[in-house]
Image 1 (tube, one colour):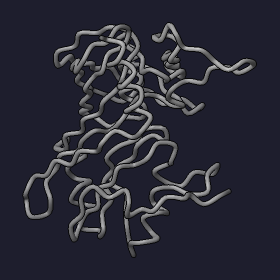
Image 2 (cartoon, rainbow, N blue to C red):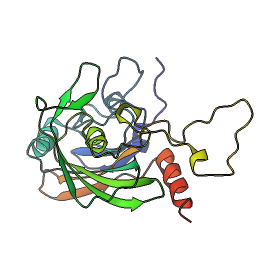
Image 3 (cartoon, rainbow, N blue to C red):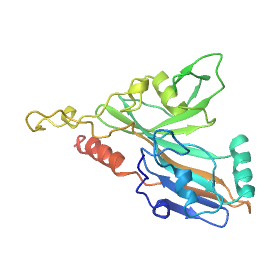
Length: 239
């Protein structure tokens, strides 16, 4: 397994004596992964004596992630997550046109043995609010605010709303092909078109919580290159 060629310090969005908030790149696991030579926690340990990751993002999800520098900070933020005092905002591009205005999806989620989830009465309670940020021709940029923190929560809740995340084939999303919106798009001979994003279009955009001194902060994470490229193509096709 190859080590990751990522400098942890290049990912930092905010830091103080207690916390480091980073912009996690896509395709990197938050914690140890048997199939990968590196992860965010391992990268943090290269520069910090005792870091603890305060929450998790799926491997393919990019965006803001909080790392505690000491046990007190970890407990402080963990309690806020537990008491649902942290405001998490994700941005997702979904297939289709949708008009959500603070739409609440309240549906319990059950973990399955194959690493996916399903909606089930036997599952744990899960709530997410959805608001349309922008409509394109055949896609929608959606602001997602999960109240709970269940596995694949945003993904399965959007699928339930018939708004699967673009590129999330596990839950019904379709890969985004530039040829679908560009009439003059030509491929080289004997080559297959690759999706513009090699993952689902989901980004943890911001995190709001209280520091140890009680001061509230909001940290935003800029889009990575692939999400920027997708939105650029969708916006260009509106003209």
